[in-house]
Every structure is written in C-alpha cells, then in structure tokens.
Amino acid sequence: MQLRHLRYFVKIVEAGSFSRAAATIHVAQPALSQQIAELEEQLGLSLLHRSARGVRPTAAGEVLYREASSILRQMEQLPGIVRSSGGEIEGSVRLGMASTLAAALAGLFIDSCKTALPKVTLKFAVADSESLKARIDANTLDLALVFEDELVAKFARVPLFRQRLYLVLRTPLAGKAASISLREIGKLPLILPGAPNVTRVLLDRAFAAEGIAPNIAAEADVLSSILSAVRTGIGDTIIPKGSLDHVSLEGLAKPVLIEPPLYLTASIISSSDYPLTRAGEEVRNVLAQFVGNYLHRASPTPGVEWIAGAISAADRPISK
Image: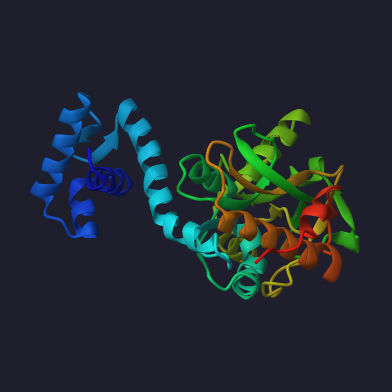
C-alpha cells in the first residue's frame, strides 16, 4: 500500500464519484479505478459501493477513510511541526466556525490570528454547528467554534460562554415588551433552521416540554437567509444572539429576550482521538483570547454569560 492509494481513495470518497475525483486531482479515470482496484485487492475487502449515482464507502471503506485522512493530515503537517520545534510556530490549521458566530467574528479573528501567529495558515470553514461537529469527527477539521446543547464525550472542548436565545421580529412587540414567553412565540409564524441544527433541536425539545406545536412558516440553514425571510414578513425567528450590530437593522426589530431563558453553550471543540498539533493548540489559545476580548471584556454582548474557568484559557499567553 502506498500513500498515493490513500490520497486517491480519500479524494474519491470526498468527491462522491470517480469522475469528479479524477477531474479534481488531474488523473485519468481508468488509472484512478485501477489504483482503487489494487487497494481493494491488497486489503481483500470491498471499499466502495458503486452505483449510477456515484460511490460511497462500505463499512470497511469508512474506517479506511477516517484513518487515511488522519495519516495524510499528519503528512501535511509534518514540515510545520518540524520547523516549529526550532522556534516560531508554523503549520496549517483547519478551523470551522458556526455561521451565527462567524457573521460577526470571522474577519476580525482571522486578522488577529495572522498577527499572533504569522507563520500559521488558517483553512477556514463556515457552516452550522452540527455540520462542523461531523467534520471534526471525520477529521476533516482540526478545531471548530460551535454552539452546543448537549456535551458529547467524543470531543475535547473549551467551553467559553453561554448564550441566551432571542426572538427576532420584523416589527416590535406591542407595548415594546422586553421579553416574550415560549407559549406566545408558539402563536407566531416562525422561520427556523431545519433539524438537526442545534438551535432547532433545543427549540423542538422546549416546545414539546410545554405541549406547544409551533407554527413553522419556513426553514433555512444560513443566518443571512433567515433574516432576509424575516424582513419580507414571512415570519419571525429565534437565534442565539442578542445583538445584530454586524448586520443591517433595516426591516428588523430589536431582539427580544425569551422567558424563561433558553441557552446554548459556545465551545471550541476538537477530536478526542487525534491530538492537536502545536499550531492547532496555539490557534485554540488565540481564539479563546479573541472571543473573550470581543464578548466579555471589550464590549459586553447581550445574553452572554462567560463560563467560569474559560477566562483562564482566554488569558493564557501565546508562546512563540
């Protein structure tokens, strides 16, 4: 078995077809098929389910994909690890950030990280929290800043803060009420992310506990799309954010607190199975510091409760 077998196999699984993988890595499709046939013969196992719609890994293929991805990732990081041992930290780090947080934090954090770790390359991804968790689990991301409802043991984590959920409407509540109950929200047309989005899972459980059948007018997965739909008057939404300073407030009322409170926890997560490189550890430190400065000390954000113990992580000095 050679490294090229692993590279080709990983690309095929990620592309979902031989033809797309061949175009991506600039290898003729027949040659690619031959390489995978050799790999399957060496292992004595079928690695891919083939169909007219593409390919997907077998149970054995899923194991090989996970382990091969880890091996290739280690090979990619090896030069930076070796160079970092002699002084300044180098390498690449694959970082994900939940879209609700990225809307305000992404650009500022990338700039802050570049200043603190000039020889570290960030490969940045934005998605919903559940998708980012799946990518951490599959070892296609090193770190992710996500919202969590339930803490899963398979992830290593640095919990940073709890964030209350707010109702966002097109027009203010009558009498400019400062809060609204879940039962009152149940009467409103709502635009929510589709399951298994972490906010949606929390809301579904909360509505069910109150015996409420919410009026779901539409579903959307991206915050910008959700807020755009609110502006059109289709419905209202619920988000883990008490400030909309990063977006235009045109067509939106000030976020309203939900009572009793509903919370999500913002955490930096990584895999429990694959330790971070030195570069990954330092990016995690910089991210904890940055979030602490942005949300806790520099300009307190509505609905944020900094978690005791996280401050020490945010205050940890960056080594160079």
